Length: 247
Image (cartoon, rainbow, N blue to C red; front, side, top):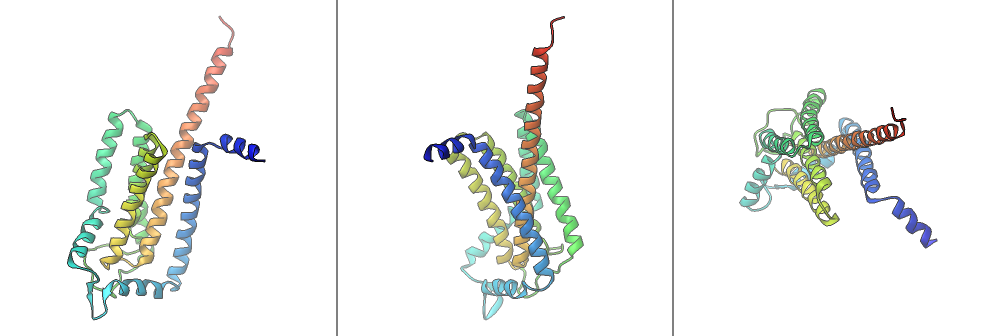
């Protein structure tokens, strides 16, 4: 029995495991987003949203966040990591590097992931048109609708896409895990800072994380599928060429 399990594990390699994990993340995130939409706009998450926001503020003054003053400064810095300006800069620099490294498919994936996520988030914000929370004072300037969080969704799409691309060329599972861990940490810091600063309901951020993760994993799976199809086509062409009769 143990030998059979070992053979099956060897047959189901690391690459297949990663693909399955990405597929599960994509599907689970989409289901999570759908559930959040349903629960949020039926009003079932109202108590949860209010409870989290109030727990992060001084009970005597809801304009004062909990913790020392330097924590508020840090959160303002963290939230800028999910701004359009910072993400655009990171995207352009990464896109240029991938082109110089002759990674055209990866560069294309990055472009589709960034531009697609920004477009999708803008359309969803207009469609849902959820007001920003007025329960506590806003500690950052905002101009758009609240659901889903643009910072949370775009940082997830950006950093998770970059994390998977970098992990794909890294050597060793520890380094791969580290790169993906950094991508996840940056995504969590950006989303968490939006709630701490009082500019988003927690469910806005959860929805942004879900959709951003699904988008990043979906784009990466599409790239892997396209590369696998190209390799299979090239192999078939080689076989056909080697099997053709000499002229």
